[in-house]
Image (cartoon, rainbow, N blue to C red; front, side, top):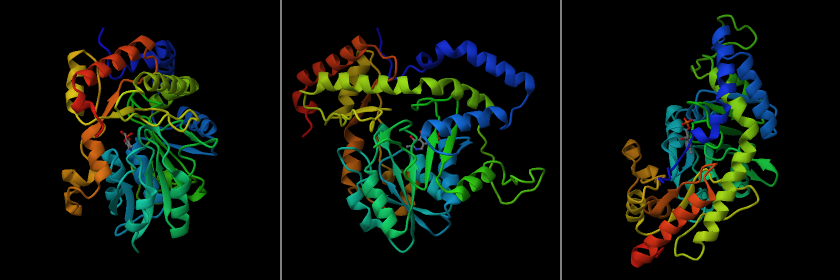
Length: 378
Ligand SMILES: Cc1ncc(COP(=O)(O)O)c(C=O)c1O
């Protein structure tokens, strides 16, 4: 039997009758813009995250753009961003007119290396965006200390780490703003695009509420616009879908962690670099990413055996054509560049069966056995 890289229907098939009821209710009322369903989701999300308010928006990318703007990042400013993440993290910085300044990652966790941040700070630096890549919390204590000492805003890109925890607090609730994505493949995935912003600062929440709806006044909403905003409202249809999935997210996260543990036990003695094994909730394995020297050959071998795998990400941001204008060169960020050449993510989705994980692991081990010099981490 083929083993896909992802299987989204598994997460919501059983919810379809309830989803259809909710959709019917919304379609009948024609309350398509914001309103009660979105508000209910925002309240439930805030409670789940342990914060006072969450603002539902159209995507994780928009969440980053609005958080940056609400925190005062403006044209001419610089924002520190890891060199290895999804392109949207840095796009958002450019969207508010600022300049992304890349910093290399820690090769073990794939997250921004706090030791490399100070050298990237200049008079123009206004903020740091920390990404909890693959679901693993970045070194948030160290990064927060740098931000505090240097007077910088700290934004968490939690797109891949919904539900990840660190010392009892959820990822996204450490910084000046936390930006979430409900892109379908995320830990809490919608039936389309969606996102949310949280912040401990009332003024940031208020600006994001204004911005997502064209700058429409919250007190005099009838065609009074207080600022130039965006059209970035979370759809009630998405909110309804996410409300039904939210109560099940804990179970889905435990599934991801259990799946990771099983891979770990099966692959531990191999020469692969495995993800850090955390069972304190600080890694929720949105992606289970291994590293080996000849990643592409393994990927092809898995494909021949009908096993899905994927590369997140084959090119670090400083080598993307869209950031050529920033003037970075090859070898600027060795850890990011090595990760781009060596990482491969294996199927980890909730509902993946034990025997499927065993098959994937056995196939990986078979490849390593037959390709000793290529499978090595050296
Ligand atoms: C790290 C990271 N940041 C930002 C985003 C953007 O989220 P969205 O696709 O909801 O705009 C993603 C999603 O793919 C992501 O993985």
